[in-house]
Image (tube, rainbow, N blue to C red):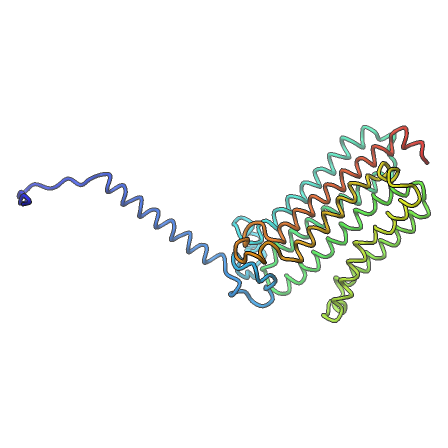
Length: 321
């Protein structure tokens, strides 16, 4: 039988119970704030406007439409399904710019007596193309939730960057691969530049952006991407694979192409999110994987260019032509 309470005597509260209660309340409050912030900042696929719907296998993690440049840029500071796309290419643009400055300072300047104007121009084209492509891509993804007009402009910017990277990558490859064949060098450089201008036109001129022109736009970009195959096959036929590998770092150029193709295949297949909808909303979606392969491909191309530069200014390379 319980003892009756003694009048005038207060029971002592357990301090650990108070601490536990306070901690629980704090955890609940923080969780409620996080949930509210998440609901405020991010939305689901079903809540998107039609103009923002691109990949139905990414179910959540979308930013709200901002109609504000400041708000779109501020979203770089929190996590959403464009974060990896933005930061991978933003940091890539900064990284390639720093690498370009270092290369000119540490590699070209000490050998300035050996280097030619063509060397500097070839590397400048590559680094400019990489910076513009990655910077424009990051800009597009950062502002893609602004408004239909800005998203459309950003999409044009994204395609423009792709053109700059492709053309900028071909310039040094052709320069080192065909330095013993100046007439062919001019021919293939002209061909690729004309194709690049054509791709810029179908990216920006509204007449060419209509649905009826979609197949032709695709063909233009495929043609630009594959335009390097013809000169490479030609050069291998003229001088052999081993000689071309020494002269232009052909193995690294081919690795670059394989990475671009694989990344584009993953992007087009929309895998792995196609197999696991909603599981790759924030991390490791197909578009993010494609971005990483673009960076790896550009790095492979750069390594091949450096090998080509070294061979060009070696005793054996200098004696060739």
